[in-house]
Amino acid sequence: MSPLALAALLAACGTPAVESPATVPARADGVLAIGQVQGRGEASPLLDRTVMVEGVVTGNFGRHLGGWFVQDAGDGDTATSDAVFVVADVDPGLRAGQRVRVRGRVVEHGERARGTLTTLQAASIEPLGEGQAPAPVALSAPPADWEPLEGMRVRIDTPLVIGGQHELSRRGVLHASFGERLRTPTELAPPGPDAARVAADNARRRLLLDDARADERPSRIWYLDGAPAPRSGSLVHGAEGIVEQRWGEWRLQLTAVPHIEAAPRPDAPSVPGRVRLASFNLGNLFNGDGRGGGFPTPRGARTEAQWQAQLARAVATLRELDPHVAALMELENDGDGPESTIAQLVEALNAGGGDWAFVRTGNGPGSDAIRVGLIYRSARLRPEGAPATLRSGPFGRNSRVPLAQAFVPVVQGRDAGPAFVVVANHFKSKGCGEAGGDNADQGDGQACWNPVRVESARLLDQWLGSDPTRTGSDLVAIVGDLNAYAQEDPLRLLRGEGWVDALAAIATQRHSFVFDGMAGRLDHVLLSPALAGRLAGAAIWHSNADEPASARDRGEAGASALPWRSSDHDPLLVGLDL
Image (cartoon, rainbow, N blue to C red):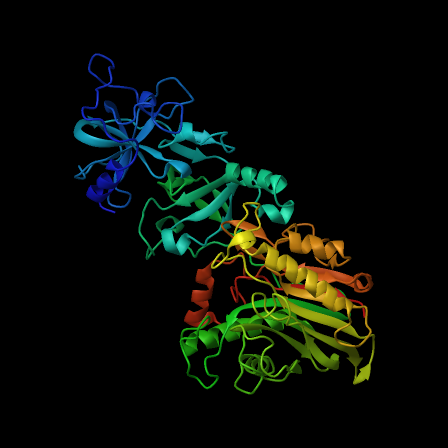
């Protein structure tokens, strides 16, 4: 945004301009301390007044943010900020370290409901030669309130942990936090007041690291200093910049390259147990028409090259996990013929020798563009009876149709254990498109379509109680992307009916998905009480959710046979003693 355009925008902010804005009395030469302009509240007490301040330019971001920051020596009040953002119709070309006197009208930039940035719309700018910038405020913990630091130089003297990079390629922003990583509130606490307390603590500890630019899709993130985008969980040391409130969130507009201690990529987990069960959301695996054409696909790959790279990453993930049966989500719903996506995935898994097979369902299950699927190692498991699907209620209309199949462990072609049932699931997402009434966001932390997910959980539990595979087995696993975090209503309902969370015993890093810089589990393995007694181990492989999207792009450039960022969900692995 140009300085002229931003000045026009700012002119529309704040209260309506008075016809003849009064000049605020000050010291003999008319200069006010910036702290008097900022005041102790979120908005300036001198809104729409014409004032004059002096200070040192701490950062000129006119080309990128439409203005620059000026900071003075302070007014002795720690409850007021000693810096202010300045915009002008014409960029005066100031640089950091210059002392200036600015006369201008006080406005508030941004939406009042989301927080505003106190700004001077300059009428005159007088350079006063070289100055000494105030030392940055050193922080070793999040302040109780960022407002007294608005616009000021700050240095973070404690490591910040990176929580997400979903805005890195779009706006040059990393989500970071003081202390531990931010967790999705409803992963830790029930919806409502308890989750709200977690959300408030998240807001207190959150700080965005920004590139001091407003460019969309920057070609280079300068503060990464040529290094690849870091994984979530990486640590940032010595972050220094200017505190700003923009787009409703507090951020540090970086002025120097920090040191980033990259979090290592974890090896694929191994779990004990004679039968290994995996859950893997494939991230919209679509193969076009299955003959090299049909691109772009409705939800997945836009080119054949993208499809081949995505397929290679999925194969690498499954080979390293080495499960005996895997429940798959976001698989193209294109039947099970030789040109179908599931058939070609299994073919790729078996390239060079393999015993993978898939449960055949004909068309579907369901009529959604994506479906669930089950693949298994035929040398280790034998399907028992026919697959079963649940198409009533919200299934097929909102949630994807569940697929249940019984298996029997085999050793050297002979049955070697009891039949057990795996049920692949994918409940309605949290996206608010077309949501209304009770399905709209209720503000309790569960987002949209929660009643549909609750009804899906209720019907799924009832259906499984009816023995849909007709095997009589009480060894049942509900597996998949339930689009609900651990403490949300659908999971609480299922646990209340006796289903056991197979991943509850994992002590740390219990997440499979990262959204808005917060980590939680949308993916679950729930065991019937009888099967829970045979649980031998469980793990989540953080090969995807913590990886930046650019890891996928680098894969498409030549390292596509690696598992990293094969999806936006992490795969789960559970070991069972059968």
